[in-house]
Image (cartoon, rainbow, N blue to C red; front, side, top):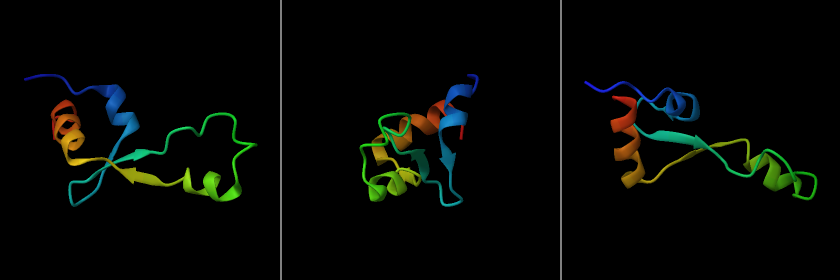
Length: 62
């Protein structure tokens, strides 16, 4: 049995239905030039694609 990738447990959330969520990219710096709408959208968790879900679940041992 492989170990869980600990870095991935910190970056992703799993919903009760099995979807995997990630944070929006581009939110660390250069935010002053972005519109308020873009900054607010960046706070949300986003679902990842099915093909990536399969791979991430394998690493997370779900």
